[in-house]
Length: 360
Image (cartoon, rainbow, N blue to C red; front, top):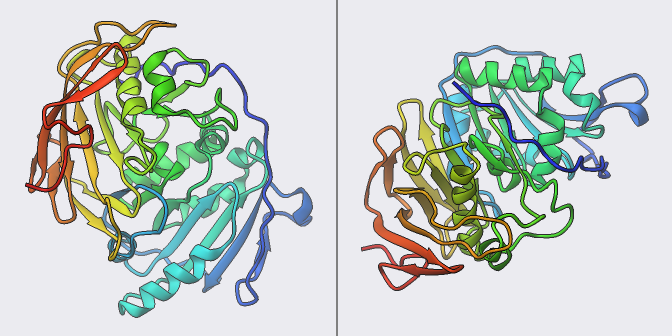
């Protein structure tokens, strides 16, 4: 059974981003007065709902350029239905990208819609938005700030609807902030505000005021015990990722041997099937693509406020394009297994490299 959430220390201010509609993607207001609507809807394709049979799949994407193969995989699983993108800021650019990609595959979708949430608090209870979730055959969370998504979803009817649709077997995923919200444990970025948490800060003080968590938001078949991170190697986030795992144990959310993590490099994606089998796909031409699977083997030795982290024997399995992994058995093929230790805030690796090295 899921435990109670850790409390967030600061409520993030609601921020509304400007949204521009392409000439062929007409905005459909969520209420009669679009200026006061809790969200704005943009749609490509049919305005009539089409229910189709779907198959579950989960996408953890690492940010930057989107991975075409990941969307093709979701499109196949959506089976010609209605695909929904949710974001708190940004444009409707995903509509034409996904709609045209589906057509080019010979697997056209009935529609692709983007919801831009304008009021993070009210939107979670907006019946028309919830109806869009209930009728979606695929749902994807765009990048942005995960604090926005936590404020929008936490404790809301929209979250209940989302989890119900996932349980009913639709494909679901996200990129960047949309991946950050997918584990049992979420670095929610709420206490950090507009300050980016780097690895050095986290390692030197695991209880930095920049670190806050929300737990047990989205429920999928294989996200138990998972902490996520994104833009991983590109932004040197291994240190903060290990700190998150240590905090999950120290705060009583996990035991010394149960904490797990999924960290994704840019232009990389982990595609997870209902049975827990997974594979990595990457965008052609990209560099430093990889997905990291972490598992702890003991509790941290020192994880207290104001002192550097000491935390040993963390097992890492680095996946490359085409590598496979099973989240049920926590075993992989085609990747690189190694071990990390943290002593006094300094990471050492069994390979001599924090990020492991190249594919064996």
